[in-house]
Image 1 (tube, rainbow, N blue to C red):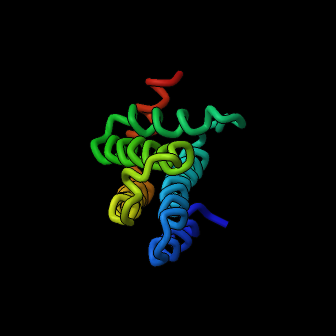
Image 2: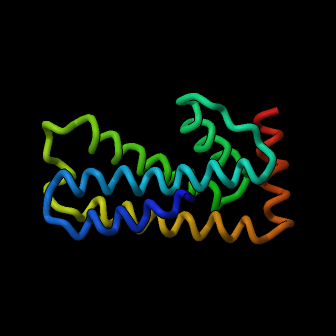
Amino acid sequence: MDGRAFLDVAQRLLQASTEADWRSAAGRAYYALMLEGRAALQRWGFTIPRTEQIHRFVRLHLLYAGDTDMGRVSQVLEELSKLRNQADYQIELLGRFASNQDTKQGLADARAALLLLDAVSSDAARRNAIITAMRKAFP
């Protein structure tokens, strides 16, 4: 299975009418992007940590890629992380989950970020420049 499969799950959860579904959808959107970022880094030759550090590893490698689009992917990942944390750990507060709008936007942002990741993956010269920048930032 690839991380993108979680996008379909998130979409189905968004169609439901409960706060719990919308909160769950936020988590699936986050994990779709994080897992696809991890898979890209793995394909690009990076050794992925096997601990909870993986979230930080993926986000920071994308952030320090020296590429505007990868910076945007990192930013979306950070925002989705905040949304997921609120969904999972701040359950006493309705806040952003009074409707499905914030989660819907998060899912749209995850889809857009995956398109940026795909564009880099399919452009060898750009991908190699990004890998070089990442290796320089994280020797």
